[in-house]
Length: 411
Ligand SMILES: Cc1ncc(COP(=O)(O)O)c(C=O)c1O
Image 1 (tube, helix red, strand yellow):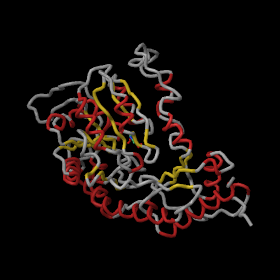
Image 2 (cartoon, protein in one colour; image 1 turned 180 degrees about the vertical axis):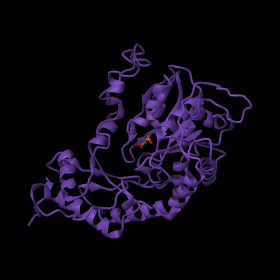
Image 3 (cartoon, helix red, strand yellow; image 1 turned 90 degrees about the horizontal axis):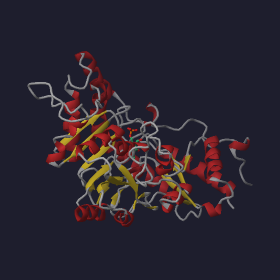
Image 4 (cartoon, protein in one colour; image 1 turned 180 degrees about the horizontal axis):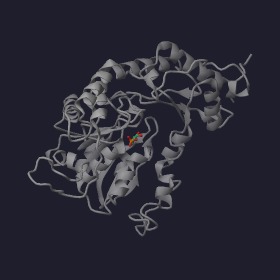
């Protein structure tokens, strides 16, 4: 007999809260973080420019990624903003970008008075499809921001070919992609600039925070200035070389970041091992497809995006998510629900007061229909939470929960 769902008063599958990235239960936090944070407190030097931890975090991150330049900042959005500032583009220049991402990828483009142009996705991996990217190149295109979604790499070789062909900068948004590999290379080191977020949900965290990396001498030397008021701190006299915000990380965050970075490999190993177990639960499942890992990629599972065969279920995705939540598994139907170009900021557009700048009068139109594959992809996507604190018994419970709910709604 079919089991009664918890949403209708049945017994929930998950009786004790699962480990989560939202608190210590799902994270690898320990004495290492505590001891470094304590050092900072004892030193009394807490801010961006005063202590040693920011410099140490930047040095260790640069070493880990094998790059010459690394700059800490206050968030992933700040990292992307700093990166876009570093390119020194002209107002009205176009930046090709992914439609499935966090708003933090788009905000820096608009803040620099640039125009976001959306390319459609390869729905297998939810990342931009290079063919669509090339179709969007115009005489005004100056850069591409690729987003390695959920921890899976974008197909970078064709993207780099496009960059060379049209002389474009490439920024890699790695806010969900720590230790992600593309053909054995770390994502974030393939284009001109890599950007990371240490916000609480990410594979490694400092609560909030960000990092910008580069191997390009011209850009790399500007990175710290781009998140520090354009202020060259080594100069004899105070100076501000160009317009840039103050997006500072603190020493306390950097202390946590150093400890987290040193654990990153074990965090990713744990996530990959648990994802493999979960993948195995759905082999040949007709209703659920597990995240694709292309042969050229190493997935690092920020979250675990399932594809639902919607033609096989007799409920909408929100009902599915609500039913899973009632069983004890908080999932999200459709990640951002709609592609990022369907939010007010772009559709109204609501940017600088009522001016609509820089989009108004430019003939730029955003709204439904722009990237049909991305729109369909989000309608079929169910995002399952993930963390390094999962054990095989949690994976069993997650699989059991999904199977119970899917079985109930099977068409
Ligand atoms: C792909 C992507 N880009 C940018 C951001 C922005 O990062 P933050 O929230 O740290 O500003 C995030 C984080 O949510 C993200 O997932």
